[in-house]
Length: 178
Image (cartoon, rainbow, N blue to C red; front, side, top):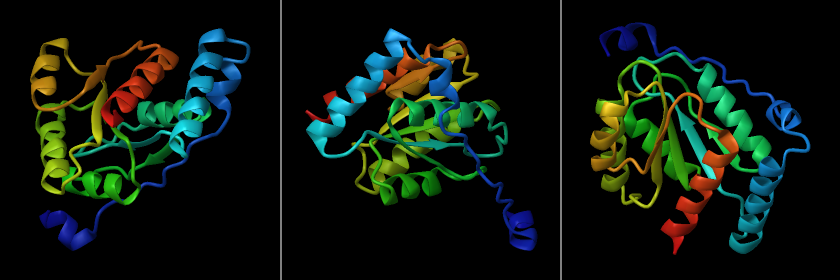
């Protein structure tokens, strides 16, 4: 915070590319199925499922977050990407401001055991505990139970099949909405 007060906070420009992920899955039945599920959700709910992808703390490794954001957008989700180096409170505020269903935390730098619980707490403190929190990235399996006990609904590690994860997340959103 001392350095931030003097120099300001670094603001990286977030760029994602639409269509790249979807093009790789052209003709794939699983990809088409999740796209249909998202369209059905949008018709039922009056809007698409909405996700905020965040990088909190000092973790500047954002390639995976960008891949996920692009993939979920190509699937049909409305996706917002938060800036690098957010605090849990800032991420919670962005989630509320953008009226998201789910926040996806991308963790590559071992801050997940501190930052994910603080994000869940910040959401609850703001009366937004219905927003689902999920994690992805390099998270040791030994930390999964801790994160789930702290309120994280799902954890997706390296090698996760993205269309399958999207189906699972969409079902979690439906279940949470009743």
